[in-house]
Amino acid sequence: MLPHAEMVHWAFAAGILFVGLCLLSEAIVGPEVWRRRKWRAYLWPGVAFALGVLLWPVMAFFTNSAIHMYAHGAWAQVLMLAGGAELGLVHGRLRSPLWRLTWPLAFAVSGIAFIVHEQNAWTFARSAFLHHLLGWTFIVAAAIVLPLVWRPRSIVFRSGFALIVVAVSVMLFCDRDVAPVFGHLSPLAGVAHR
Amino acid sequence: METTFTRSTSAARTRRTSVRSKVVSLIGPATILAGIIWAILQPYRLTLLHPVGQGFWWLVFEPPLLVAVVGVVFIAVVARPLLADLEEADAASR
Image (tube, rainbow over all chains, first blue to last red; front, side, top):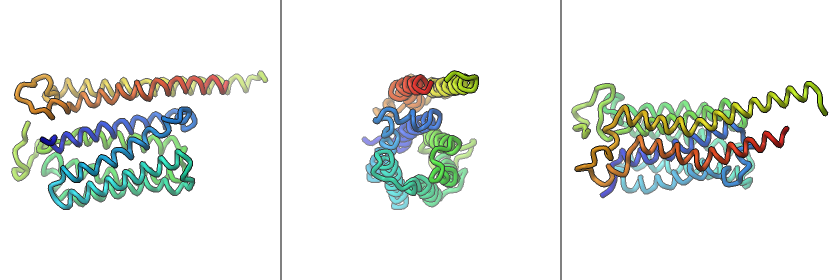
């Protein structure tokens, strides 16, 4: 009686969208105003960390091959690491700006995991297309968020970070278990259920 | 101190704050609108509109509604207190 994999993707998309909107707001108002209420400073890093924790049950219950399990496990680890590092930086327990390298690392690992664990071509089915697209998006995103290590207050890079996270949520919302992409669905993928 | 320079800097800051307030206050409604437009374009994604024969999870996960709910939560939890803080910060800096 487990939900379909696509439903889990939509649930994560909702959480990621919320993180993206928080990041966008923070980029617009600036860190001083954003941190005027203590709880708000912990909000998006906390949600990101929680999403990392929630990826573990996804890894345990929703993966049907070793390579899927490794990919979901890798995402869980890097998301917990990046969210946790951000929580430490906000709290003041971590001081080195190098901890911000955890986001480019998380994006690079996520991108590679997406591309490596998708073994079908781009137009095999919608999920295959989205896996490739998400993988390359994350790899480009790693380069975009890298300057935040040295320029954490840059509105351009902060907005870029936020918009990438929103774009990732949109891609996850587009995911279906078996559906065509641009009118193409490989007969090997199965029958589209709706 | 009351000089032309101080007045113009203060006016510029107020204008900037007002633009930022408008953008922040639009994020939530824009998200809700995106969910509504999606629901109109793809009504079959809302199983609540044709619930007969749908399983439990199909009735729980309604992607366009999820988007709209994120917008509502964002307005209630983030945008409202953030706008109040933005105004406070602007008033304090004047």
